[in-house]
Image 1 (tube, rainbow, N blue to C red):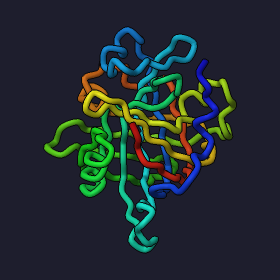
Image 2 (image 1 turned 180 degrees about the horizontal axis):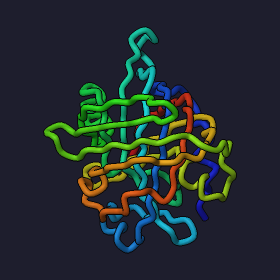
Image 3 (image 1 turned 180 degrees about the vertical axis):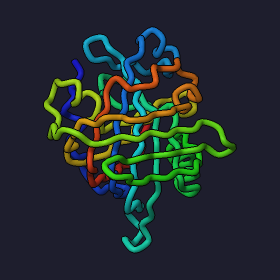
Amino acid sequence: MIDRLAPSQRPPGANSGTQRWESLLFCHWEIDPAQLRPHLPAAMELDTYDGRAFVGIVPFKMRHIRPSWLPHRFAFNFLETNVRTYVVHNDRPGVYFFSLDASSRLAVMAARIGWSLPYHFARMSSEQCGDEQIYQSVRRGGHAKHRVAFRVTDHLGPSVPDSLEHFLFERYLLFVEKNRHVYCGQVHHDPYDVWSAEVTEIDDQLVTAAGLPNPQQQPALAHFSPGVDVEVFAIAR
């Protein structure tokens, strides 16, 4: 039995760092589980909601990032866009990242070395045009471009347990395979305050760059959250 609430509890002890995630856009496409499963490590199970599997693209702003030993005044910011799906390992639900693009070379280097996460350096921008927000990203070398424009619509509030929104958003564990072993990292934050979003334009190459099936251009689901303050805990086998 999968306990989907336990990972939201704060782990004991000190965190290894803090950061803030702001202006998150969650775009999700439904993909045939049989097509998605071969792209996952064998040790992880694909997590589904009523038999439905999802791939998500999440562009957002990383703010006030610092390890626990670094004074606040040295915290730094960057933009990030990740491509993800949802998995279970040892009956624990979490996120599996196919790729993460970031506008900070330091963040890319640190995450690749410290967490073995598939980060890529990219030129990225975020702008507000009237009631629309626009995220753009071009991976180093001109490969894997991404552009999305959207507007925020109806306020939904925090997700209700057992709902599809809770399944997609309230994920506090990440799993990564390193040297044929599975490692787990955990974060802690308040539940997302969620709004529905209308995607007015999207041009994505990140999903296919990860080797995944090309989804229909318009996401099946789009949501927005203003942000959360996050504690990060060390990755462990």
